[in-house]
Length: 85
Ligand code: SF4
Image 1: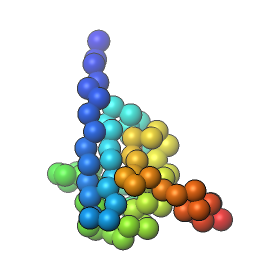
Image 2 (image 1 turned 90 degrees about the horizontal axis):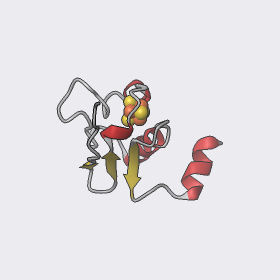
Image 3 (image 1 turned 60 degrees about the horizontal axis):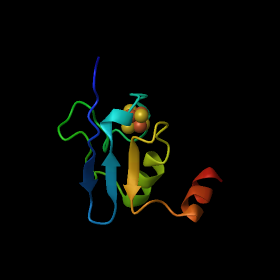
């Protein structure tokens, strides 16, 4: 039986931190397709939070279908509403 360790990795641009929990990732590829300059699975580290603006990163992270990507600080409700408009 495969045991997935519950670790989390943090990638900060000084303004916002992307948190990645690999055990939750379902490898949908949405993040890499949507913002490849930040999320590149062929690169180490695979998340480069300096490669795009905070709003662009936030808007991509909130699309993660599994919750493997989250933000610190978390997005505000008005940010989520703005994204869905
Ligand atoms: S969008 Fe989320 S679930 Fe999909 S590959 Fe990226 S981190 Fe994994």
